[in-house]
Amino acid sequence: MHQRSGLWEAVEAASNPETQIDDNRRMWRELQNWLSSWGRAILVGKNVGTFDRVFLEHAKPGITAPLSHQNLDVRTLLNAFTFWGGTNKPTLPETPPMYHRAKVDVHHDIECIGVIADWIEDASAL
Image (cartoon, rainbow, N blue to C red):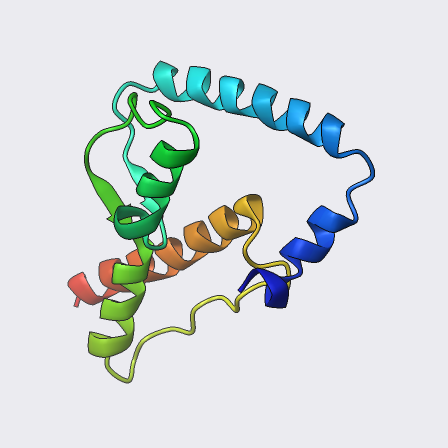
């Protein structure tokens, strides 16, 4: 997956790995502070319950402490939409070429949730 998405190539091409490590440490601190300010936010993303939460806790113990125990798994929404959407469902946004980068993935997930939410709202108005 990482090879196909170009993630490994991007890491290997990084100009200064030491700077990236420092940047990542600062980012983790800022993220944890930001999460704490939201109270009990819900973790959202694809496969968050089976992968992301476990990965985050392994990589940075305590990082999910400010979050609710609940997850919103976008993959489950996408599967339900695919299986039970019928023939009148809208087209979901295409997977972006730089897929499997946090920021790109988040924006894609938000777009998918928006399409599904609009579709549900339109269907409930019938």
